[in-house]
Image (cartoon, rainbow, N blue to C red; front, top):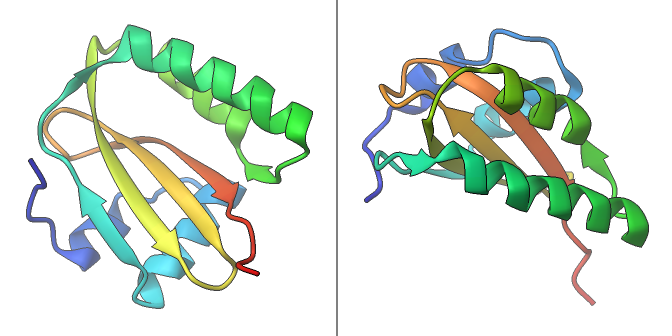
Length: 119
């Protein structure tokens, strides 16, 4: 179920200066659409999915921001469950996957994936 989270409150969670964090924060500032889900999901299967996805994106040559860093942060976070968020940036066309603590009070990692330009 989507959580109600104020845009400014979400932007305050971006305390790192990684490439994905900076780009996502800028997208939110530019009024990018976003959704945060409050229901936690198990981290272990999520990690497996994102490891496979990272390998596939590398093979396809799809530009990403902080893919390896995101996986490392998730492996090191010590949580069993995380909440997810999504930010859709229009320019540049990036999809940002957010991984948040169950209390929605800490951003664990942010991953950016460039979306194809529509034909």
